[in-house]
Length: 476
Image (cartoon, rainbow, N blue to C red; front, side, top):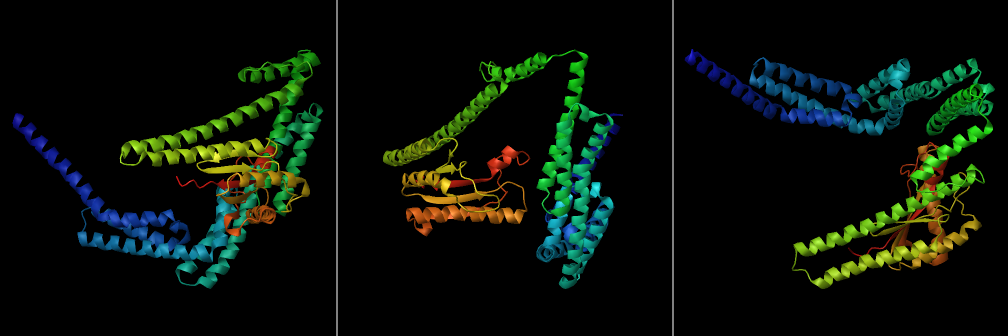
């Protein structure tokens, strides 16, 4: 019995070792083919070069099946070689597709973002078939036909995107509004319901007139959805107030109680003797002060990290002269002093001052432009005079003017507008300071670098900004 057990252990051990060896052989044998397929998939070859990618994948699967069933090693190697060949071929077609079918690719991405496959399945399917046809023409070497067919696919994707957006952003809100009408919510919340209907109507109009910029209709639809839900709350609250015989005093006290919770969290004592608005404003200012303190702490922390890094470098390389460390420390201190001096120039309504590494950022919150324009109005000359003083405080610096917009409007127009506004500020400073052209540059980022939520009016206002970056360049 003991001998049988020993034999079984030996057999199981041999089987286990054989499996491990087999897996190692497979990984080595399939490594290059798998890498080629993975890299092709990463650049969306399954979409942009479907026939080549599918062929490569089939050869790979064929090799896997042969390996699993103990097939001929030469056949397996041949299949993997073909898989690599077609995967590489697919990657070359992808490069062509990104140029020839770029507009259709962008339209497809937008349709995907709108979840068109789920919300507009028929139109999505039609667009996908047309796009595949275009890509197959490209695989056959017919770039001209591929370009023409991709234009048709682009329109079909835009159609699918529009349908999907309507489903995603509008249908739910219209259903809620219908429910609100059925329950006579407008009797208790007429203004809120009217606002919701106005917003949803505007959203539909925006989709029809400018469907390539979905940010505006999406935001309007979300605001409408919020307002109708808000109306339901008001309606229910009003009914409960009637049922419980609540007075105006009761309702004011409830509102004050809610604000008091915020005040307590901020370690503040609210005073409602002059109404809620005054207290709300004071709390908002307190929050703003805390945010400024947080930003200041971030700057101090960054300075501390710089100094620690220098000290660690000095400790790790004791051969460096102490004077070099002292010089670098002095440069960090100089940047800190320049930052503090610039910060004192502006009030919070004019500019917010930040420090990022050795850069000092002046966020010109008080500088606004007319809608859609890049004209600097005379009322901002005083603010820009302070900017000139700030630049003079860092004489060896270089300057970058960054323009930013919110997400409303097309990507292309926003990029162009941000560039024009940044350039306008650059030209103003050059003209008024005699700055050399190579010391100052301007760049527009459009809507690509938001600092706040584009779905709120306040957030969009923060995103529409000019950031002036002073590169102190202390050589650290």
